[in-house]
Amino acid sequence: MTKTDLIRLLATETNQSQASVGDVVSTLLRVVMETVAAGQPVLIPGFGTFKATSRAARLGKNPATGAELEIPATIVPKFTPGTTFKNLVRDGAEMED
Image (cartoon, rainbow, N blue to C red; front, side, top):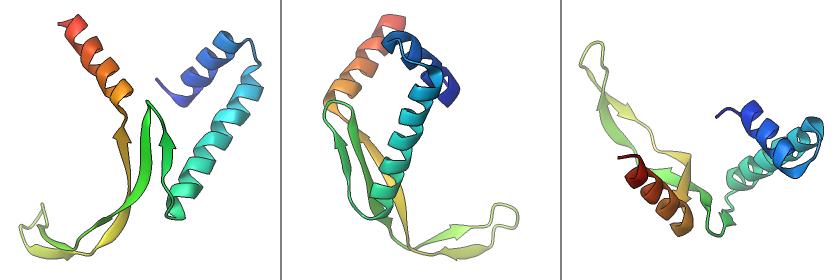
């Protein structure tokens, strides 16, 4: 599902215009990204948590040459799904088997 598909579905399910829903979705995504970038987690009960996490420096290999190279420490975004989300995905996956 793309962002456009999501907006279309939400507009249909809420009887709102796609433009209105698009503005809300874009604002939601911007606020989540800005909050996480500022070092604060975004907790949505049942859905999950978005947060910034540190990744330690490590040694890697250049895939083209095989030469070792140092990958510097960095901060990356991380999403941890909530229990309700995990259970829904698990149960949905079992139903497809």
